[in-house]
Image (cartoon, rainbow, N blue to C red; front, side):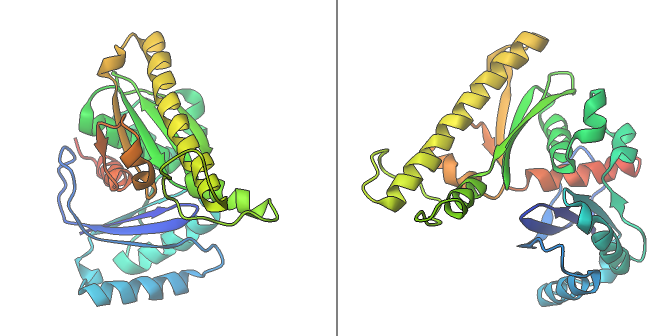
Length: 273
């Protein structure tokens, strides 16, 4: 089995993949766990926590062949490298610029030093899965739009505050506005405080997403010559379900998209062709 650990700003996702080293196939996730990101936790605490989760599901560490770690939280990189080493008995693959030369996508010079590892995994999965110009809309702590062109080159990324981040920021920076459920209202004419916030944020983000996708298609078409109708759009991330019912511009929705990209990065780094 492959252990993939994706450390985000809000959650850590740990997933076990069935052993399959064919980089051209989508991996089968045997089990996935999500838990809160906490830089104050020690490696021993995370190791004990994962050990308990594994035992509860009947998984044995001895069946894990290797591990891969991706992190956008620098303070937790070393922590989870050590956790993965204790689980597998060897140093895990760490997604960083040392692996970029093994990957099937092209990165412009600035991206080699600045692109987040989660965005990199999204770009790799987009190209491997579709082999065409693709926009990956990732609904996480940040809302990101990662665009790969028809030649497998990362053309750019747009980043906005995520839905949950926007709701929390509104509450934290005002005296009387609460944190509300992330739910689309029936109308933009809010009749109470909760509906007012939901109308402004959820319906507002519908407009943001739809505009950004259309603008990205226009810009990519102008830069590379690809026809706008040939650009694929896929959504992922834990909060994609909030807008999915009211947004009609995604050809595919896959909550595992980033994890699948992380698996492929690991396989390429280990010499897969």
